[in-house]
Image (cartoon, rainbow, N blue to C red):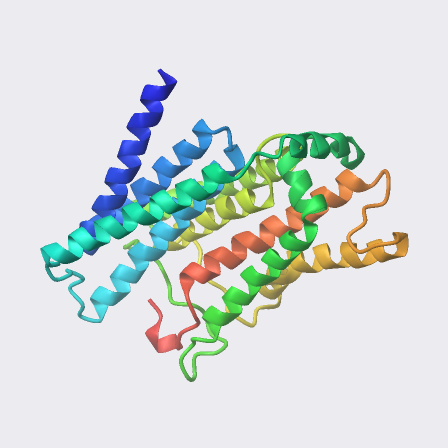
Amino acid sequence: MTLAFDMILCLMIVGTAAAALLMRNALAAIVFFIVLGNLLGLAWLAMDAVNVAMAEIAIGAGVTGVLLILTRQRLMALGDDLVSAEMPGWFRTGALVACAGFAELIGSAVLSVAPADDLGGSIAALMPGLGIENPVTGVLLAFRAYDTLLEAFVLLGALVAVWSLAPRGAWPQRPAALALAENGGHGVAAAFGRLLLPLALVMAAYLVWAGSDLPGGAFQAGTVLAGGLIIAAIGGAVSWPRADDRYLRVALVLGPAVFLIIGLAGIAQGRFLFYPPGFEKALIVAIEYSLALSIGVTLALQVAGPPVAPDHEG
């Protein structure tokens, strides 16, 4: 039964990916891309990688899907019909052969790597000292803390790059409104946005807290929070703040700043990012909550795009 499910899932993933690539209509391609993200999430779940599955569904299917839909909307506003020209047969065949060869190359490389049987045991032996039970959180915030800290700053830098695309005279105004609701924000979309945002906040808080011992964590919580903010903005339930809003900037830098401060404080104990005995879990949870807030706000603003002049909002 498991083998049959895996084979069907693999065929669905390959077929959906092919459809997303070959569709001439942009909206249809985006729909297939979103379906592909959800199918990949199921594949990760089948491999017991729950944390990766949540990130794939939230970012690969959710946030990225919304970003593509908004991009399509803005391109159509510029007069682009977003229908690609018919591709010649030789190009389709060549692309199919190239993709199949690349997939085989990646698969061969993965299968050629010998599993490190002692790696899981080494991590499990060190986990009690952190006061948490989720090995993914332990790896990200203890054994690979440098990588996680750098990722937080890279995400913030990506938002700065998006903001740098603001046209002349637009800084530091608000990003363009995403609202699709009519009647002054009293439609179904607005009501759904107002309902979903509190649920997203509660779910994000739970994912951070549960991430210490169960699947979850800051990045998963951040993507859920970003999704709630984006849907609320699309429904017109919330509006984006100005780029120079002090509370917005605090939310953006809070996660990386708390992570960096705790890391620098560890130098007094002998090394950077050292967690004092007895305070490991408390510090890790503090980092996770601050990172979740920063990640959620940063992702939402990246989807919103750069600031625009007041007369171009909407």
